[in-house]
Image: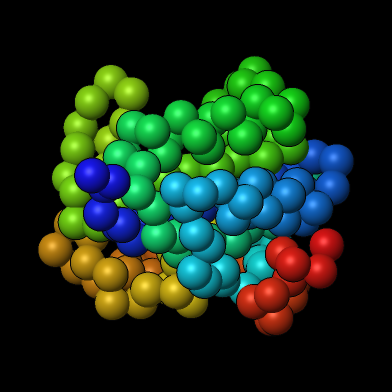
Length: 171
């Protein structure tokens, strides 16, 4: 019997090469699978670098998917897509062609060496919260809705790069 579908949220970002095309290609790879369906995508944001600030600005987005994959298999899919797009992990918070993070997976709370859900630092990062709030402002993480977490972070400098949520289908 196949697994039941679960709603999960992915965070996407990048600042090397053509990050918008890379994020679109990543979403299209997820959409092409039998075990995943992209059900909604946030607006596209242009965001200042965070953590390591001496690098190009990023583009960020979030996606809601419906999947029959379990959380670890979804993480492995994201990592495989990153590898296929030549993502190299050299330095923490450094430049990247693509970044795919599993932000939340249903109401699963998980802490393993490989994966922590919900994403452990998402509530501190406007570049994650702003796109996620486009899709799920009432999603509860650590006993608070995303919209409340967003009100607590500094979103200065973040710009809407494309308000059309279908941006990823046109690239």
